Length: 182
Image 1 (cartoon, rainbow, N blue to C red):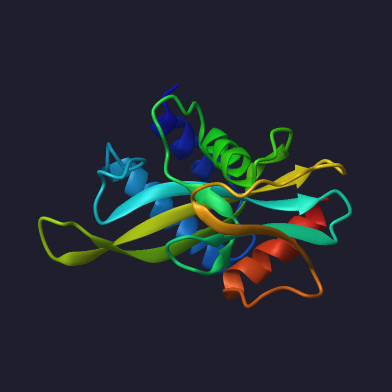
Image 2: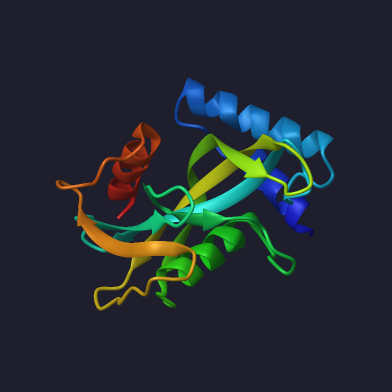
């Protein structure tokens, strides 16, 4: 099965928890049904991305990264790469690479869907916006996990869930979902 086929099957099978998430699920499925390269950066203006929120096994702390370009705190995630076998595999690879924690336990059912615009500037032309159709998972870190800041981040830090930095509302929702899963 190709990555595209896996992503489509995963999203078709996912049971959205509410009407808003169902609308996003339907949009992601329609995108993949109509766009052969819908998992890749070459798909414009939309492409599917995947990531994971890393939470400790007690559900009391989350590991966030201060994104180098956006300069905001986010979960880990990014684009599919050749060789990624599954949509969950994209999220797992991104979380391990960006957190520096090799032994995360990924919960392989999507936790949340989100769409976010990303300004893109091509040196050959004007700036334009792409949309990341983001499939978010949850990854549980072992008790002795030691994070490492990757070159993609300005910082990687554990945050108590009762003392979070300023986050987008969808990230706050994702943290609540993650806590219910551990």
